[in-house]
Image 1 (cartoon, rainbow, N blue to C red):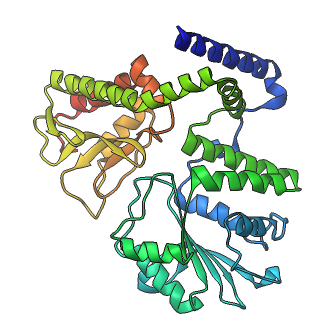
Image 2: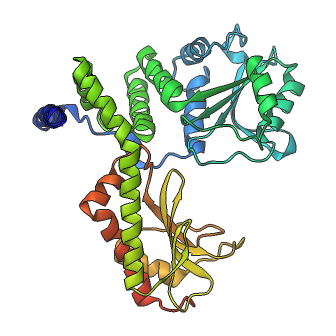
Image 3: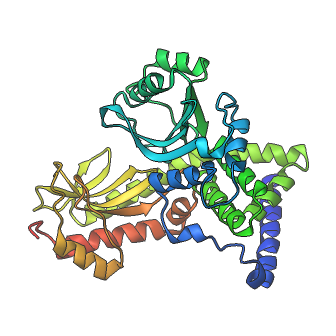
Length: 384
């Protein structure tokens, strides 16, 4: 009864906030975010961060962001007297055909802050990647550097990238730092906005912060989030119930995921498709020999499409199937070595709610079923 009452109160508070927003929506436009018009990738996020850390850029706020960044993350070794001495580059070319995402240097003192930016938990380090970065920085800066590994919470630097012993040694010397978006960078972006005097630049930073919060923390609405936080903190009963719910979420997600996968396999079985792989949700029409219809947990979410059994460096497409799907479900598909056709089914499933809600309301299965039916009914043979 206490848990039901807890949810009823939360629901009432959310309803009130939504009613206020509806009434004042034209004036507040609280759901508008310019970043919703494109998908952020690692290069774009790196470009934005580098732009604000560069005191000579067109934000016209001089070195306020760089100085705050240095102070916040205890990078006091990096000193400068003139903004013109600072150079900020993205995709800095170094030895072994490597490129560092963000490279901040003092041209006079040779001090460097390098940032390796990983915006997805499943993006793997290349072999010796971090080791090569550090060797280059040691050689060019006389060890007057810090390499920051910026990533989502829970992501680890691979031992293939640098050994555990070397990672600990460089970390102890403050030459290697791990910062996360959830615990470090999002708050830093918020503080950048607070320090900004220009309204347009401040608005951009606030939108960027909200976009990152949605990507990494699932925060769709900061007003609702704050109201829920205040309610939870009111007393120990509310806090205890909140932890009970929080600790139940991993098991809830496991059960929902199993339910989705079992029903998808049942649908494929009814269509007489053979299950090709237990690791991924892959199914083969009877006459297919080179491809599978696949749903795969990748890029922090689920991608779906047609996957090859062997990689194709030429990235050969399936134009007839692609055109048919484009007309039927109004989606544009991508192409890679392994996937002649792929698209995001759901993104950021660890933190965003839509996939889990759509399992419960049936939309996820309906969408998956339609995709499989379209291909299986029209393209029994894969020679297209």
